[in-house]
Image 1 (cartoon, rainbow, N blue to C red):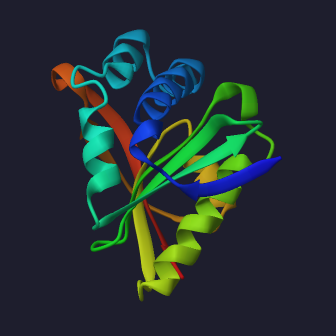
Image 2 (image 1 turned 135 degrees about the vertical axis):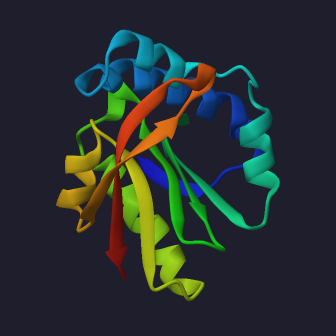
Amino acid sequence: MLSIRSATEDDAKPILDLRKASIRAFGPEGYHDEQVDAWAAQPLGVAPYLESIRDESKYVIVAEEDGEVAGFGRLELDTGVLSAVYVHPEYARNGLGSSLLSHLESVARNVGLDSLSLHASLNAADFYEENGYERIETVEHEVFGGVELACVEMRRNL
């Protein structure tokens, strides 16, 4: 049974592993191998995830299915930036991403945000568009090693 809850420090490593698996599985839909490798690289390990989980200005959630972390999302509460929505490949394309997104949008409304913005990877832009986000422009996002990824800036009014 699927459940969505706030992330705890114990979730940092599963989140890290899930992010890498998701990028490796779906990144090639929009990027070449060097870009996928740089995007999936995690030279700081779990530290950034622990920091996000501890930071009260960020809201980090995980979706669990049968005790396994199947997806996660992160919302910057002070800026309304959706900085992450990832689903493990084994659980992808069955509504889990939309459930995570809906949960984060609900939290955003509850804290008084009137819109959300994000930089969607090329392989995820259609997903966000299907969930009511508007494409604004193509932007460059720098990942590990100075590698640039084209992303789509998107926004949704709540």
